[in-house]
Length: 338
Image (tube, rainbow, N blue to C red):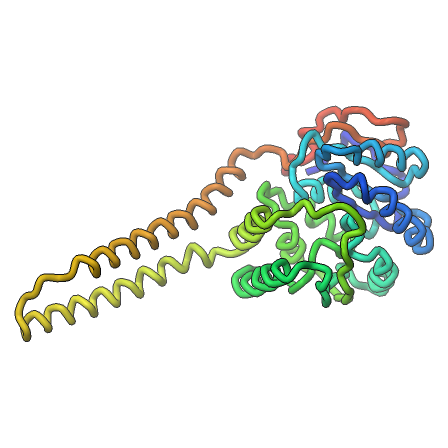
């Protein structure tokens, strides 16, 4: 877990916003212009933890510029692009607020919802989920694939995950500390959020179009993301091959009995080449699929066994009250499990 290489403020802020960023130079100014007045109205004692996930544009420079005018903005620069799940993990490790809210910089998740989320938290909820009830801003293909993903996940994953709920949510400090105890490297954050549980309420909202720029998720990345979700929180893809094998065995025995009876009644006949090849190819395909499923699980075991850090921090600004930014000594120890 997080080691004491980074100082903590004596009085933690009420609200921490975690913002993973990857090539979001176009959105930076608009994001802060939108979010800061909302946070000021909620509680002037806030922090915005911005995690630059190896951006190739000027995102890091823009973050430092905003940090220089607002000390509540804190900047973390990872050593390379580790992916959104790792960047979000870094933000959770470093955020100090009593309530923590992950949010994307593209403003598709409306910051105006923060007031309702904070009100629900102050009323006793430990997790406030933001559920998307209208995704018309997404393409038809994106909506269809997303609906299919949540449908499959709801029936296979344990524990059950809420439908159409992303990373945008409010979590009490108790929940964040529980999440920081989960050391796995193959991180599907929506699943980890669901796994820890705690008292939850849900607020509905309409998903907005991106404020600027283009999404960084293509369909290959979304496919791998879906695989992570299923493999990380369900053993059903492994178990299903046992049931499939049993069913095939029953059918094979039945077919064998049929052939014996037919041969006794009608005599011996030469089987067809086409039917034989079809059966061979079909079952070879099933074997390859089953090996592929096993390979998905084995590859994640391989990642976990190596025990590499989830992320590495190159530069950091704002977490020890020191001006400027500097490399963090012992950054590789920030994510070691206890």
